Length: 258
Image 1: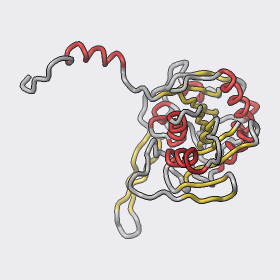
Image 2: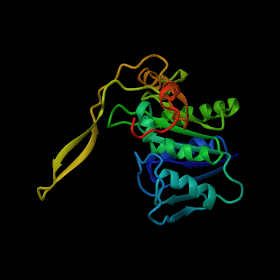
Image 3: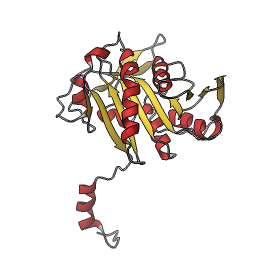
Image 4: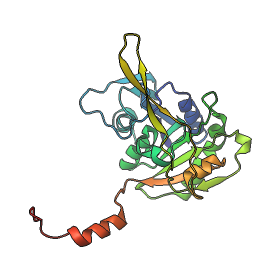
């Protein structure tokens, strides 16, 4: 099995080391193509107005001066020799990708790009509720087993699998839960205003750290309670109830005067 590893934290990220360790437990044909620099929050951005450059570190390790989407695109079409990858793993992200996070996550975007190219893809993230510690041993311990179980079970071609590991030591993680994407009931993102040494104003995004009160069965609840969360995601964003309701009144001739 040929595996392509990527991420959004960049080629030198600690989480990428964990991802490669996971991949090497599954195959001896592991390739790495990641962004040259951190691209957290890049979502599905694609570089269109600037040239892309590839840097080679060894025969199967490369970086691209672009986004996670660029890295997977270039990895599959220009870098990996011979047959295309059988599996794309993205991560391990330094921080959870749950609830609304999935819409701007570069980690998940890399997996979505793989899926759109017909390759089964899994995004992996490690929850962190402390700035001082990241329990990388947890995905390194449980990751390969999770991926094996997912590959054995299979999933639809238009779906990516979003795996989040809780902020717990490996021995403290005893359960897996297949979850739905949750929704936070508190806005966490804010922009803090600061002054530079020349008196200019700049802004730095931060998070309040306020925990929400999520319902059972969601990715947020599973992570809060120390379970590994597995969420199937796809790109079909149409809201069916709204579609049906609007169709009843709006379908028909266009009359600008109405």
